[in-house]
Image (cartoon, rainbow, N blue to C red; front, side, top):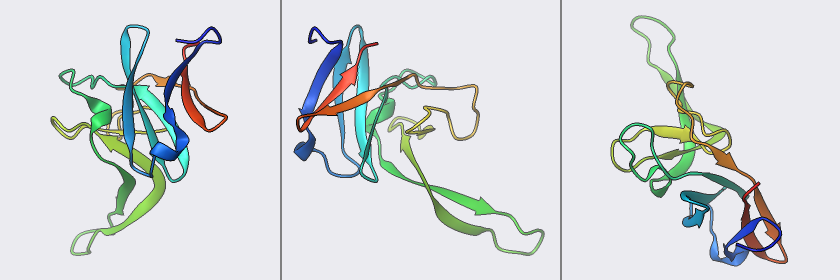
Length: 124
């Protein structure tokens, strides 16, 4: 960790959309991911059974609208991105850390800083 409260992750050029890198921030593992050109960081510990929540797929959130009995559910991808824990598929919003089905489950989020072409996670 540097003196300015930042933990170096990797060069910005090492990330493509959907990529995640895991780093130690204090005593916690944090997944730093890139989605739709933006960087996000969440605690890499699923509240379900402690799995590596940030090591699953990062993808747009699929949403559906039920139109009633006998009608097909209309589905589309939203502008929001999720990451899904590879152990059991629990999915979390990459920006807020909230579980997509039950907002009482939240992965702590961290500030990401890009400075001089390098991605950092703030410890503050």
